[in-house]
Length: 387
Image (cartoon, rainbow, N blue to C red; front, side, top):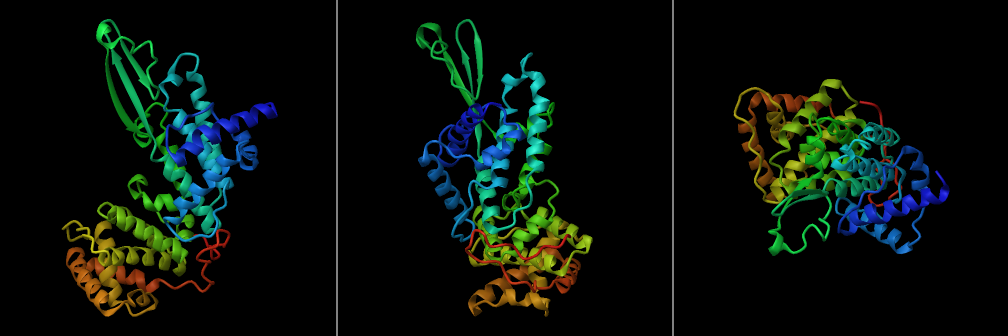
């Protein structure tokens, strides 16, 4: 493409789509964004410096809701690739691409989105992880408003676009009626059976480990992969993610997080990774008690299911005498409340689940590497080893 055309497309993308994701309003998709534009989009700047400034302010604001950070790198290569892939996946939900002369482009655009996601390496710093979350969190909040317009003679359907003025003109004379409905972008992805967009959308979610941990309802069979375990190894990020989940409500997290812990244990990972995962689940349940929020009641079956394993982490912590016991260094009144919650969890989970959780705790070890900085956007994670 001509360089001027590439920059023009970037301006449309960063102003009409990305900027409106952050500041509100209607985000507009542009033409499809091929992977060949990725390098330019990572390095380009908008002609309006106010747009760039506001984008950075909003990224920092969203990031700071999760964990303290002095500076968030943006534009960040991974975050831009996620934004471009999310844009193309949103574009593919447009029914106008299902017309005769446009239909053939859909597989190519879908392939472009997958290629863009393949270019996203795991985040190396807290700032990178939070920048990606800031972008993807806003993409997942997108909705499409559809309008059905009926008059005495015709029915018109407009997907994601306002009806033209001539269609709704003279409403009384022409008996014009409008009916509006909304669908989330997530719903549209799940409904796209022909294109099968949901697996690619799931891959999009996996490129932002903070977002994936915050949205276990979208993860399907959630696993604690290397990227998410590196995030959980950052104490500030781990605490922020746990706090955000508690504020939203923990009723739906027991099964996916219990399953993820079970799968991680089965892989025999390094003890440091087990520590990060268990510390996260323990902090999640302790914060729930300290914030005086209702706990989640697991199923009543005696088998050690995923929900029972999640519930068993807290009572197992009181029986544990190893390195994990420091998580219970609380003020006496708080400790009494957490102990009372642990007793309820023990009754709900059953002794088999508590014994299983205790065996996992006994294998965990506190990482020996220095903890990452609690504020620097460029502070690296502790060295990661494959699980």
